[in-house]
Image (cartoon, rainbow, N blue to C red):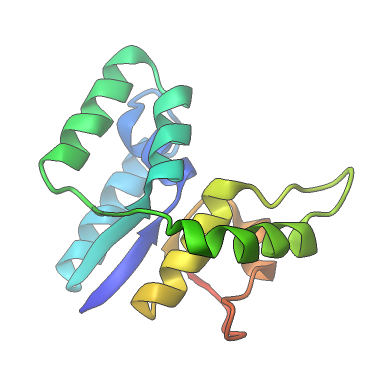
Length: 139
């Protein structure tokens, strides 16, 4: 099965109709699904997007997730120490923090054997690597 990982920024743009990139990501999500890609994300990304969105966007996102809009993956507690180590490796003090939401997508990419990602966070995802060394392809 082919997947496209779904980052916080895209969920915010998709569920905030006032967001300037709303139509762009609405189209990108349709194109990914048309090409047989299933959307996949993590609870940290959903929580982060939900916090950023207005109440109406927040509820729309959660209802979309509940209706199967994207596969949602849990974080395995056993993976957390390695994820923290990864965050420390990719954090650039004063410049960029490798946060839990981003790193949860790195781990999901490894789990699903997926390098395709929908994100606005180009700077970080162009430098992040899957634990096996593969780079992400930003859609």
